Length: 185
Image 1 (cartoon, rainbow, N blue to C red):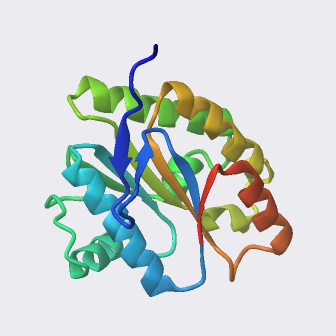
Image 2: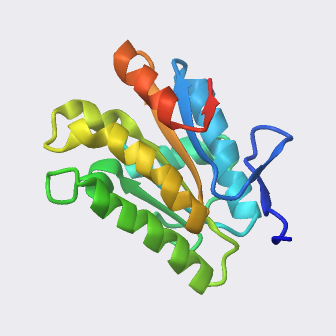
C-alpha cells in the first residue's frame, strides 16, 4: 500500500487537490482572474509553500499592488524567501528563446529547492500571454504544457497556467484544454 496522497487547498474552492496538480485557467475577466490568483497565492503562503508568480501583463510591482489591494498578505519585497514575482519573459525566455526543456528544469528546481529549504512544496502560476509575441520556440508551448504533467509526478508542485481567451485563438485554447488535467473556467 502506497503513502496517502498529499492534498492541498488551492484557495478558491473548498475542495482539496493532490499536490502536483497542473491546471489551466481560461479567463475573460481581469478582475475575476486577479481574485482567483490572489486566493491561490494566499493559500500557498498559508500552506507554507514557496510561491512564484510570472507576470506578463503588468510589472511585478503593479501586480504586487493588485494582490495587496485584494488583501493578500505578501512579504515586503518582490523576491522574498516565501514569495517571488518575476517577469514572465525573464523566466520562460531568458535568452530571447523559449526552450521547454530549460523551463522544465526550472520547475524541477523550484520544487527541489522549496523542499530543501523546509517548505511543504512549491506553488507557481504564470501568465501565458508572452507566447503570443512570436518569440522563437513559442510554437512548442503545447509540448511544454504536456510535459509538465509528467514532471509533476515526481516534483509535485501546484501550477496554474493562465490563458486569456480574448487573446488566444480557439485552436490554441483547444490544445491547452487537451493537455491540462484540470481546468478553471
